[in-house]
Amino acid sequence: MSQQIHWFPGHMKKAQNEIEKKVKIVDCVIELLDARVPLASRNETLFQITQNKLRLVVLTKADLADPIETKKWSNYFENAGSAVIFADLNKSSDIQNIIKNVEKLGEAKQQKLVAKGMKPQPIRAMIIGIPNVGKSTLINKLAKRHSASVQNKPGHTKSQQLIKVSNRFELLDTPGILQNSYEDKNKAMLLALTGSIKREILPTEEVAEEAYKYLHAHYFNNLKERFSYLEEVDQANDAFVKIARSRGYLSKGLEDTSKAMEVFLNELKNGQIGRVSFERAN
Image 1 (cartoon, rainbow, N blue to C red):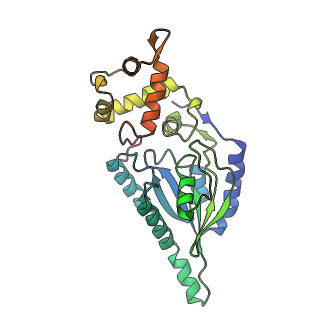
Image 2: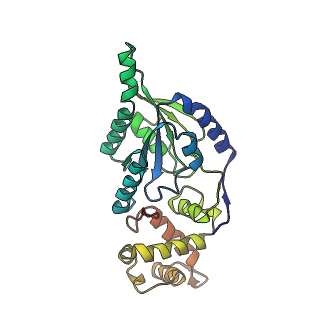
Image 3: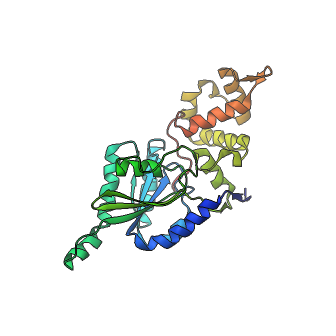
C-alpha cells in the first residue's frame, strides 16, 4: 500500500507556518498522541520543528487502548528521551498529573531566573497534535473553562491562542495539523479508524475489512464478546453479512453490509468492542 493520501486544508498550512515562528517563545512542547496509534498520530513535520524543545508526550484516549500496549509505548517514548504519561482526559487526576509534569519541565528555567534575582515567569507550553486527539478537551480541563471549543470531528480548531492556566503555567494552543501527505496508506487507514482524518478519504469497505482482520488476529476475544455469532467467522465479508442479518440491517430484502460496516467502525472507534491498540510496540 504505497499510494499517498493527501488531506491538508489551507488553514493547516498557515498554522504550521505559525508554529514554526512561535516555537521560539515557548519553554516546552506538550505533544498529544493517540494511545491506540502513537506513531501514526505523530505529525513528523511538527516533531522536527519542535524537536529542540523540552517535550511531554501525552498518550491520550488511554481508556480506549490496550493497557499492556500503552505501557510498552510509554517505555518506548521514555527510551527516546521524552517525558511521557498516558491519560484519560476525563479524569481529573490525569489532568493534575499533566500539570505536574509540565511544571517539572519548567523548573530549571525558573530556578535560573530566581538565581539571577528575577521574578519567575510562567512556564509557556505549546500543545501540538493532529485533529481529534483530545487537544481542545485538555485545554478546557487545564484552563477550567471552555476556552477552546470542542467538536468531535477532525480539523475543528483553526487558530492559535494563548491561554493562562495559572500564574505559573501558560498554554499556546495550536490547531490540529496533519502531515500534508501520507506515503504509507496503512498509516492513513489507522487515522481513519481513530477518527483523526475523515473516513470518506478511504473506502469504508477497505477500512472495515482491514479492521476486522486485525481484530481477528490480535483481539479475537473482543470480537467474541461483542459479536458472539462471529466466533467461527474468519472472512470479513461473511462477518458483515452476519452483523447485518443479526441487527436487522436490510436493504431491498438483502443484508445491508455497508451499514453493518459503518456501525462496526463506529463501535470500534468508540471502544464498544473493547480496548484495542492498532499499533503494537516492539
